[in-house]
Length: 272
Picture: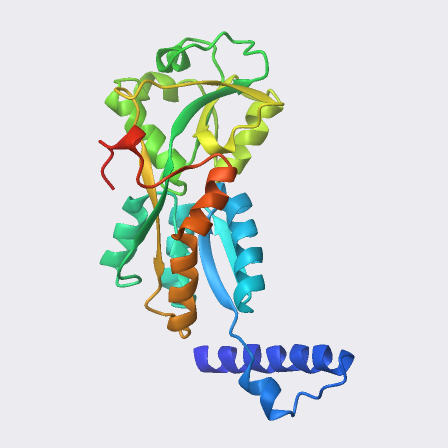
């Protein structure tokens, strides 16, 4: 079944190439055109990294000619998809725990560490519920929106974070939603459909929300990994993309989007 699917994809790609070449006066039968064709990479990526990764794909494709096709979603959801299809080239979840799970399932091997994911408390602009700390999420009547656990990296980490501070049971009483992606949390908070949520710091939208920082002693900061899938049929190109994402050039794009790149003295005590 997989062989037939790959054949169909290859034929579609050849048809597309033929159309493109026809516009420039070159035919698809030209050996040189076939020899220089670059494979398209399928990259599974946590939804919270969409903006920097979209920019990285544009720069990488411009520099190498290798197209990037993303599947964005919750880290655990992506893990399930990869395990079912056994197809794809690269995995970049929101935390190393998901990558460890993928490695245990034989889906990946080595990883490169790229940036930190820092949980913060987000509230609608003006903070109408007067949230000042994690403890306030447990106050009666406070509407709380959290990421789904285990579907999202932020949801799984939030539960551990609240449990660490002995707040999980009380905060769960105030839940109005468990969203499938961290981006859905932004909608709930920015639209005032919840009084508070926990998101990644890099997703903060200052025009629509305010932040309350969590002290390092209470927080759980994670590291974002990336690696090549064992299912990849384009390993040299996949390794090239992973190397680019983890390079100084790739990390600079993440920094532009508000991420703290790995390693950092600010989080020297954070272990992958």
